[in-house]
Figure 1: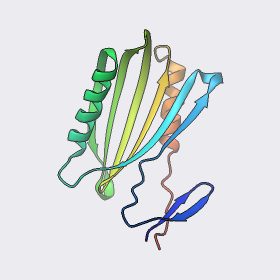
Figure 2: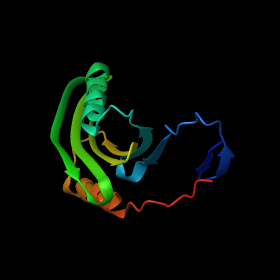
Figure 3: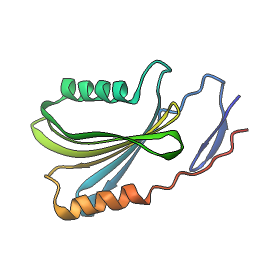
Length: 142
């Protein structure tokens, strides 16, 4: 049985346990929301397939969807990154979002920075500082 670690502690789960958690961090002073999500790719799915599927979901749930600057990058130690900007109208309001998805093996970690106004230079700087500050935490699996 795998041990599942989270900020407040740990649990022992059945072998089929799969981490697909989402953390939402609201930053009212920046009029922003940071969403951190985890997922696992099925063995036959590539990062490109996963991102295309996520974009299709956005297009199904929203109107006037624009995906800009879609970019895939090979990193060291087998990591891959996908970054893009998305604008979409949801419930009559336009949402602006930057996505940064990190693939390590079959594991995915997605960071999304969402605003209700178009990105200013300061917003872009805040987002870049968040992405640049990411440090993976090593967790021993028992």
